[in-house]
Length: 134
Image (cartoon, rainbow, N blue to C red; front, side):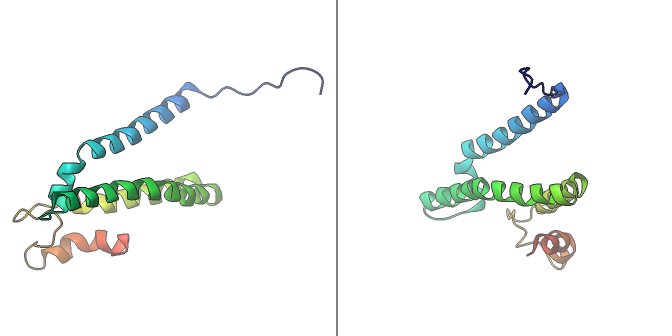
C-alpha cells in the first residue's frame, strides 16, 4: 500500500537442507526399486512366466506412487489438526511395523514367513500383522 515491496522472512538453510535430503532419499528409493524390479519380481512374485513376475513387481511400484500422496494428505491433515509430533510418531510406527517382517530370519528360501516353523510365526509376526491390519 505504501509502494514498498513486502519482505518475507528467509527460510533457514537447515530447513532447505532437510527438504533436499528427504527428496533425495525418496528419489533414491523409487530409483533403486525400478532398477531392481526384475529381481524383486523373481524373488517375491515367482511365476512360470517372467513377464507376470515383472508386472506384479511393477504393480507394487505403482501402488507406491498412488498411496504416498494419499498418506501425505491423511498424515498432513493429522499434523495440522493434532500436531506434528503425533503425526510423525504414527508415520514412524507404521514404517517400523511394515519393516518388521523383513527382519525375520529366512527358512527354506521363504521370505514372506509362510513357512516359519511351528508357532514361531505367531510370536514373531503377530505384532506387526495386527498393527498393520492383517
